Image (cartoon, rainbow, N blue to C red; front, side, top):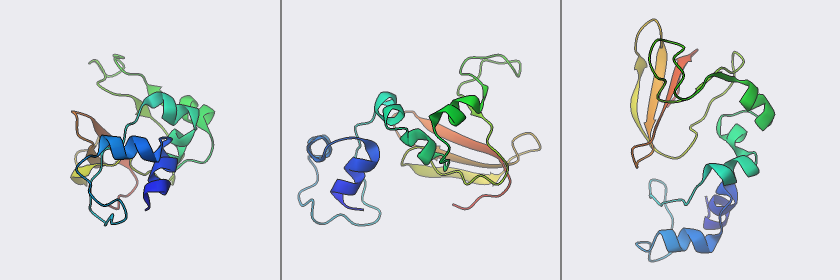
Length: 136
């Protein structure tokens, strides 16, 4: 990726990326594995409808909203849901919502099945469970 492509993908400006990452001395030399901070807000992701793209869905945000199975804080399973559960059609290709580090990739149990957990930093993690298969 280039700095321009990264900025476009996340709905931010090149200047915002540079301001957020003063540790980068030469923006012409970005290598695979380099880490940069991206100033994100849910508002700018939703406004660009890129949230669906992050989930591998090209069906639009309305489809994604209709996919909500259990809301944050709901007691559908006897405890306050610490996240939001989405159901997508079988064989959907799911990609990480935000950049991060995979901290778990395994079959967990019969309820969650094949599962991947991504740590995005700042105490934010996403859990991808009940997957038909997983490739990390």
